[in-house]
Length: 225
Image 1 (cartoon, rainbow, N blue to C red):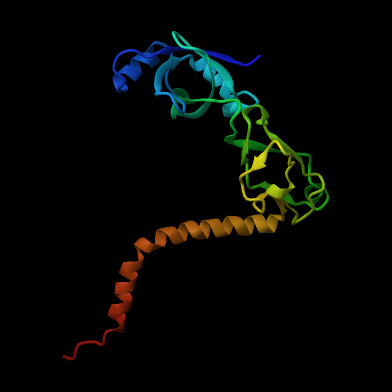
Image 2: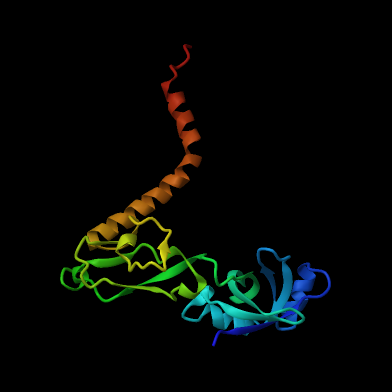
């Protein structure tokens, strides 16, 4: 049975004060979008939304949205905002879903097993891509993409092209993109050092003009007395 989210149309002015009143009443403001429909301002139960976001399929979950006075619609969460200090949901955007039309979504990549390059040769597994973008019908959206990495050796690379493929799912992420690789500790240290150097280099331009001035001054001959 699909999740059912019951929503109530928001009344009054749709400004910050109105949104605060919605949250003070224990709900969160939401907006429902969809092709061929005007946006609808709603208020929903944050517990229901949190349950969906933390489910196995997460924000890719398709659920039944019931709005008072309107026909039920298939919907999914496309964006959400959280209050950073208390980590509470404060706003969500919902999208109407047509079950017969393909969707573009990002799906989590789940690595299964311990690579031989880690287990036998002491390497480190580095997952570069946590999600990949795919296109498929709503009913075919996987909750996550599982891939066995036990045969990945030292310096071995797992690419998008190595992920499970099927006719139902089309990968939009580049096939040659690296999903994960097994690296040595020395390589990891070098990568970290390169990152630190890049960060330091990014801060350097602010000091360059002054250094350049000094260099030019040093080049100028001293004035004759």
